[in-house]
Length: 164
Image (cartoon, rainbow, N blue to C red; front, side, top):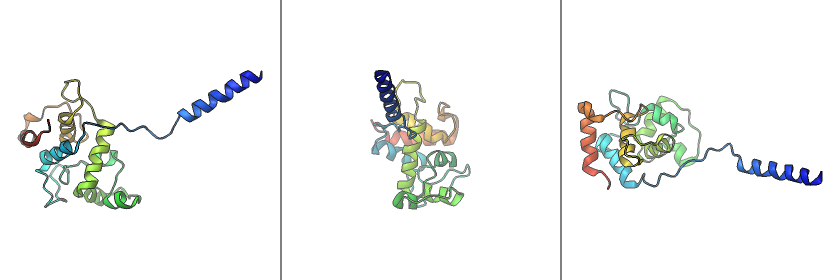
């Protein structure tokens, strides 16, 4: 009886220790600074002179973030990033973050940790896939970009600085 009780207690301790409410976030070893720089360049030419500019489709900042990407990444703001404060999650917070390179970069990294996938079917998730994910915002990433003039322009800017 005592052996069974010890076994049950040990099993409960193991299960309790191995269970966590905190999701494990993957480390994206191939989402490098070079890749992030190219994602920014592909999206806007990495225009930091007009960081708060939004396109007609509602994508903002040098990475051309969508509201959905920002929301999925936890709705960070530059102040939240610097001081650990809470965000209200409103439109102004979105444009503030999208216009701040560091905050927008944080959104891209977090979004890719959640939604990173092989978009082009080459069995590797790399910067080419992250580019397609960012280009499509929070839409499916497998659609070809060369079907529209904006997509072709995006691809051209990416190819100029594509990390090897």
